[in-house]
Image (cartoon, rainbow, N blue to C red):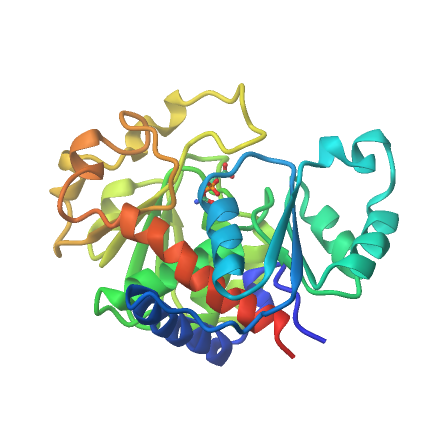
Length: 301
Ligand code: CP
Ligand code: NVA
């Protein structure tokens, strides 16, 4: 019953299209002060091993809107913090809850939780992927009048979880992707291989930021230091900053996107981040609407 969402590749193109469509519908309803009570009576646990503002709050508020209850768990306050296994925890949580949302380090931990749960598990970010963010961002892109199946996205910075999820999404949806990263910071090779073998989009990894953005419809960036990577240097990423000079290399007038949190002066300048082309705050809002569409998709029969 229900569906796990552990990686973008768990979804098919038609399913992503449907989640995007439903997110738009739920956004319209919300503006009218309405929400369907489609998950009435459900209890959903949020097990977060890393910090979160947007993902946690948007899922909690979204569950409330849909008639369900959210139960936040800091793993350090549970018996996980004292060594109880993830497999045992999954069995216990499944007997109380209708779904589990997990944010953790290793993707294998989210997978192990799902393998031992009888209720759907949603990945709210791991070191490897951030699938709910990328589905929500495709909704934000479509809302701007850009087809999420026919555009070019340039991702700049670190080949991290966001980059990996865009690689998987590009292969499924068919949009073109250029990833500009310093040597040694390329996206995950397994996700790259799967995408280039099975997808029908153009995916390029380059070390030249100006060539990546030249024909881009969307420029996307993210923090240089992801959660759990504290201590890593930032200097190597400097040439990949999204700034006015870089934008002068663009042939089109691209949308600027950032999943947030932003570090102005690092991956993006304050001028670009707070300028008219940047839709980062709309992206953040849309996590509520797309998150609700994802919750319905995963938790309804
Ligand atoms: N974009 C995003 O996932 O933000 P949080 O870390 O605040 O949840
Ligand atoms: N790559 C970032 C995304 C934060 C939403 C991180 O993992 O910290």
